[in-house]
Length: 270
Ligand SMILES: [Fe+2]
Ligand SMILES: [Fe+2]
Image (cartoon, rainbow, N blue to C red; front, side, top):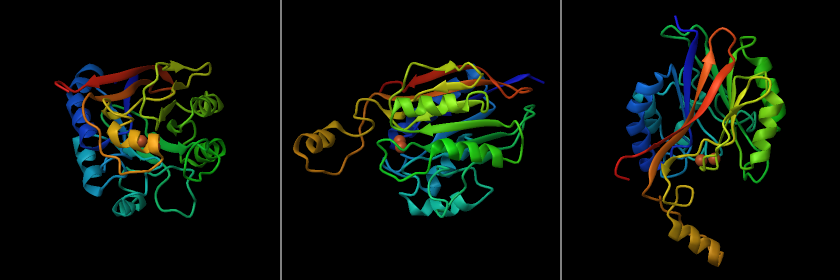
């Protein structure tokens, strides 16, 4: 039995270009890291905003053990019954209204020689975000305390706009969770590292999507809106598709991260 296992986390999967890049990357990632746990943020799959039940099932059948969401969690109402179902591994951000629907964390059961369950949860930031969310620091504390295991292997996704808020959350949780993984900006950062008390951290894993764009959208519409102040519908971008994420090597006995490394897989021919 191995004393470590790999967990991969891919960033916000944006529309069909993102799905194509993600699916194309999976064989090479499997070959290189043999991940025991696969997680992806699916908040942008439905034309850039939200996720349909079919899109969730497609990811699940492809091998993803957990699908997380962010500020676009409820944009596609048909996903709500899946969010409410305890047996379906998709969750909404934990610090949205407690009266809102949906699970606040996912438990990924141990299988295949891995001896420990893994818990995954997302918290939204409060700075420059357009959804009202509760305090992510207090939410993460309460969530850890409420889990059915003590000293569990916990992955917290920091779905936030600012680098400082993510780093602050990571330092707040250092030594108490296995990893704090940033998402939401759709732009990867080059700062993957292990914090002083052992928590793995990266400010943003970036998106799985078309990088020849403005964070996944066609530049024409975004520029029209930003230069005239008149908002128009944003089309999906295309070109430069890549699947970006990170891989965390986890010590099965201690639950601590041994390493964190960025993943960046360009789609061939894009
Ligand atoms: Fe996103
Ligand atoms: Fe987001």
